[in-house]
Image (cartoon, rainbow, N blue to C red; front, side, top):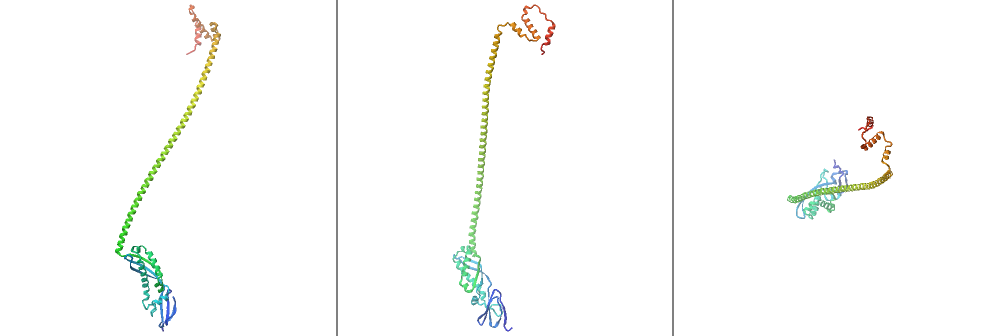
Length: 340
């Protein structure tokens, strides 16, 4: 329709409208009508792009190494990039008239490879395998500060290394060496574990022996305490026995004194009785025995008087010719005689 067309750009696409060699309209995500026969459209994508790469390089010790990673970038200055590369759209307003838009990521990869090679030539194979993070940081910083990247008007957002691999033969050699080291570490770990087990067992045995020694020491202390307690009890008993014996001795001494005093008193009483009897006997010394006998018969029972009479008869039996005793007298004597 007379060459008039409508263009609506995406929000992350920067559009440039050229007419007669001059920019008449530009911006991100703009929409406008244009006259196709006299207008050139330039579309520069500004969205971030992730570009994977696989690089084959050589380390400082001349070992082949393969680096697999990814770099992310985005267009920061679309007008600058549009002046360096051709982002002109074809008449259908969809395709580009050249392959320059597809070359930008290759230029980024090439610059990344150049910087990566410069860093790898400073590292040995082992260092490159072990310091991938440091390698990424240095290469990314060099990419950010790269004059080439700044001239393209793009911004490197991220760089990541997914794998760093040597060639298969070197990898097998490293694996064998590492395997030997791992086996050696495993053997050392087994030795340390066994040694620790032996040390632990020895410590347990020592603790058991120390416990037995402590138990025996406590038993010995208990026995000594028991012996001391028994000795103290024996000493207390001996003291009690000594006190009892001393009390008995004191009591016996008191009894001895009492007996001596009692004997002395009885002796004095006996002496007094003897003196009394001597005095009485002295008083009856000159008295006629018959008078004494008569005096003793005073107050006797009839039976006793008859017995005394029979005794007198017996004493004078030589002078008596015949003696007649009436049966009534004997019966009276038998009545009063004590029964057995």
